[in-house]
Length: 97
Ligand code: SF4
Image: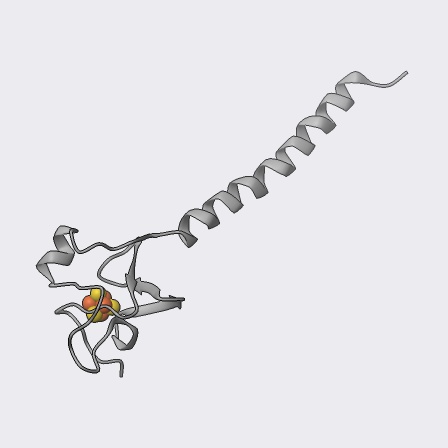
């Protein structure tokens, strides 16, 4: 005869093992799919952010505050949790050293 308490404990442990990766994957997807900064964002407006730079040789992609490029977007230290367009620009642009 099997010990029912031991079976329940094993099931509880197994459920816990599978729950952790699901939470981790969900968190990863959230950070990987950060929303794009829009020109209607109040801070973006205050800094004159545009998704298509009109300044020759100055774009987010060559700004010191730009990081983690992925496709046509990347992170900006001024806009945490948002992605900026690699071809964008704002008045805080600073040349990469
Ligand atoms: S600070 Fe640099 S990377 Fe950030 S939005 Fe302005 S130009 Fe783009």
